[in-house]
Image (tube, rainbow, N blue to C red; front, side):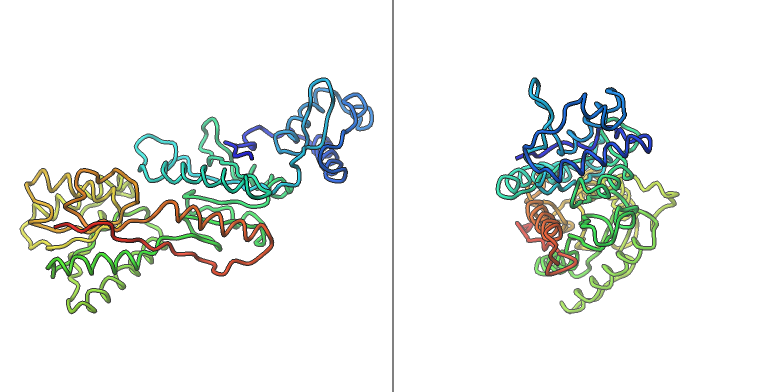
Length: 379
């Protein structure tokens, strides 16, 4: 089993048509001969391919990094014993997974993914490797290099997580398996936000709330972001009406509704804090129940409420999206309704979908929606 940080971080040797031709020739030779077969010596290859030892060593380094050959000291060059294993690259956002201050959910997801990848690699003829989207930093990979590896046949599938709107799907053949999470695409694993809204409204209603607000953090000014938000508001309105109430549009807020931010929305925590300070310190009536889809935004709302002396679970009730196992709201759980998503279920869905596609099969569903569950209700 090999779950790797990344084999693709090595800079490719194919800097010219000649070195690319050498790489392709040796790759094809390895696949023809099969696992564990000994290949010609360095001296023989240099003579046959009319190249220098330095250039050949660079190419052999790439082939070894890509799990095509292996060099055994004192013995020679061999075709890798696992050359026919499927390889799946998991492309992760540097911003969410590596920068300080990122929500803890992403590290939880990464940790669970590595454990599940290790388990599956022991049971199946496949390997997972984890690479980070480049941003001019060491230890990252550009999308171009990942696409090149896919086109060379060195990887058979990609899982892309939170890498933004510019995804790999449009760079590769549409038949190449690319599964996404927290971004647009053809094959996706997504949060079931409608179920979160339904559970949140139902819980707040049962707690006696009759004026329910919806405070949502904003990620971008894109049209897709607005379409998603408007769809959530429509579903919220329908859900409240089904309970016998009505939605007050002025109770549905995003940070752009209360101030001019020029595209710099701040962190989700900052957005929640700014919305809460504006509403709680204003003169207009405030909702008796608030539904917030993100736990980081909720932590900002809690900070504002504490500063202004507003009691959670007494003066106002809050239902919030959260992640199972997260400690973001640890000290306030008894005062909140937590509607939790399971990172483990997200990982399983991503693996199941990409592995089905890699096997040449079609998954049952193009979009898999992960449903949340309520863990505890404020008293």
